[in-house]
Image (cartoon, rainbow, N blue to C red; front, side):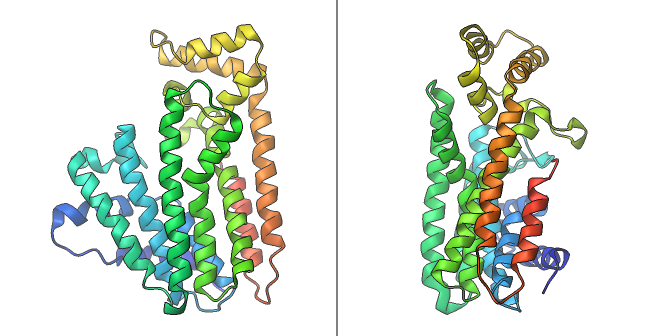
Length: 323
């Protein structure tokens, strides 16, 4: 049984040797760059821990885990272009460090490389791995399109928002656990439970992100209230809109359309409305509900191996994070 630290070391070593050629440098250097600037590596870690539930040796399943991380970073490269984001993890985004055309093409190469890595898993598991990966990749695209559509819509409902974040964020966490398990010999029912656990954890994770953006500790280098400044319709905004009286709802909507207010004044005013209707507490309750559902799915997994307990501990760490 490998510890999280040992699995993380395997992942970092694998990323360093992820198979990108040296030439042409303009195509592959940006891929190596975005993979080198860190991140939580939660997706490949989930894949290896999913494999560890069913197999003592996780090394044969490392390519599958790396496929999840390379694909995730591909989506970040393209997301940053669409968001016109200057920074990712405190470093220049790929399109800022190089240019948009380079970022698009390098991202495409990363997406293809993720399939190359996936094919490096056990051959007897290849078809179910590709099937799940394809479904997940399409869902991520659908979630991104929904997110862009929501920016222009005034009629976004909480259920639609939760479906969007499930597609954009959560399905890849579920896919990571599922593919790790299938790679290691799990049956479909066992892998499906892990998928559900990852999906519910991902929804809880994204709700937590929304909360931390507005109420997190700015000393960690992230702008507090950045979502408010960018008029993002987070779970906090949607709850406040639905809970507020007519006057406060009108004020909230006006603040989200008013470019004349200073950024700090806008964030403070919106937070006052959030506080008045206790939306942080409502969001935390919803986050906890999805988290408990994720643990329940994980706990119901029957296995002769001991890998479920480390996963439960990892889920606890994700739920209690502060950044």
